[in-house]
Image (cartoon, rainbow, N blue to C red):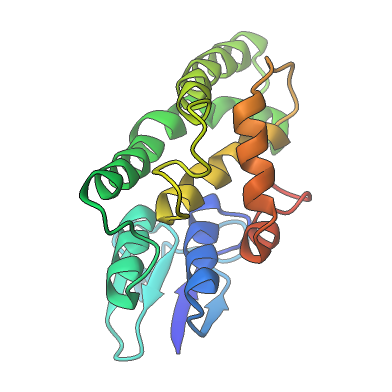
Length: 206
């Protein structure tokens, strides 16, 4: 049985758990990551020197980290959740990378200040800057989803939808005055209709 180390309030941990559920892979999970369990201890650092979650441990004891890499690894080793057609495969990997490199960075301050209410993240100007930059990235996603495909890479659900879907969840869960994003909203609702999507995009945290 696969073991996942990480707290479920982490969007990156939920990426992996959602993929495992979609793939029907049996797993267990241990809470790691602040404030639950500090990963900066030798036991954890031996598995991931970055002290970040998630970490996935296979049945043979081998371990891997970095959430989007884990999505690709699970899809390839379990034979599902990646398109077979070459261009759609490229699109899935493109949007998976975009989520990590472009969409993640802008939301940091706004999420910490508005969603998680963390002390020290209450500067109105920094919150405004964060939401402005985040909205610009969501505009890119909205334009892509408005093309009318049911999923980000085409007709079939893929690991890219897990990453993008959780990002949409975070967008809609963070309380601030947002511009309408009808295509993103419809896409998000479509992903919530999947049992694993509903499980890992709950209304009590983003």
